[in-house]
Amino acid sequence: MRFLNKKHKLSQDSMEEGVGLITLTDPTSVIAEQFRTIRTNIQFSSIDEKIRSVVFTSSGPSQGKSTVSANVAVTWADQGLDVLLVDADMRRPTIHQTFQVPNKKGLTALLTNQEVDLNQVIQKTPVDHLFVLPCGVVPPNPSELLNTRKMDVLIKELTKHFDLVIFDAPPVISVTDAQILASKVDGTIMVVPQGIADKSSVLKSKELLEVVHARLLGAIMNRVKSENNGGYYGGYYGGYYGGYYGKNE
Ligand SMILES: Nc1ncnc2c1ncn2[C@@H]1O[C@H](COP(=O)(O)OP(=O)(O)O)[C@@H](O)[C@H]1O
Ligand SMILES: [Mg+2]
Image 1 (cartoon, protein in one colour):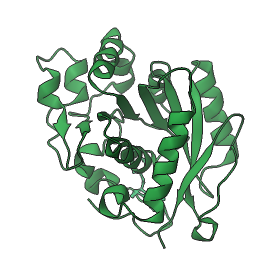
Image 2 (image 1 turned 90 degrees about the vertical axis):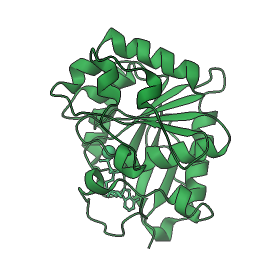
Image 3 (image 1 turned 180 degrees about the horizontal axis):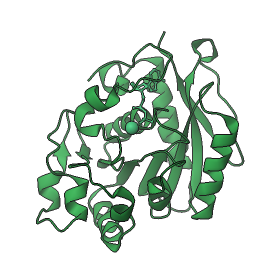
Image 4 (image 1 turned 180 degrees about the vertical axis):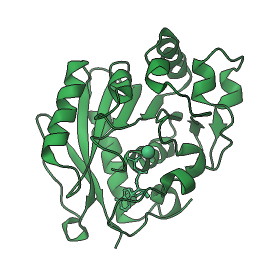
């Protein structure tokens, strides 16, 4: 595990090294506090219906989906709720690296016809109440695997065992995986890196998610410049809350 890297340019190294878990390594930091605010905002984004499953996505690659979903998962588990973080980014899986767990068998084994049960693939983490389901062997056909009845049954099963199931997904534009997942879970959250994501791609992603009737809970501004820390952004678009965390420099 490592701290967030300080380079502004998008790095591709999270597949080798995992992402920074500042909520674990520095829980009293401003950034960790912002993750707790994001958690609270997500919790309160639906008052009538309890949210049991969420997917994190973004318009493009390397925008912070894995970083944000893993840190939000830690803050959720810190409250004593049993949380499962699932690596559903079968294009660029990172969760096994972030939490240093074996990745021989994971989500893909559960979705193909292999004889595995949940206990064999769900792993403990150093965080109490936080469990992870790594991706496993990268399959040639991720969207086909996600778009199955088996996946529906799996989500149902996982939400029976855990208070919250968080899916880390690929970007919305270019592959359909995130749309498929968004259509199956209770809520979808977009990660939007300030100054990196372009407006038209973000709007296009929103449209693609609406086509599948995703329930958009909000957008998280990522990589917000440090001079803005301490303030909050309003909604990025209709009905969105603006939680974010900034660069740690
Ligand atoms: N706010 C941030 N500040 C600094 N580095 C960040 C921030 N968010 C993400 N990163 C880094 O950017 C890279 C891509 O982030 P990642 O979460 O893996 O993106 P994605 O899952 O969308 O591909 C990683 O190396 C990660 O550590
Ligand atoms: Mg990722």
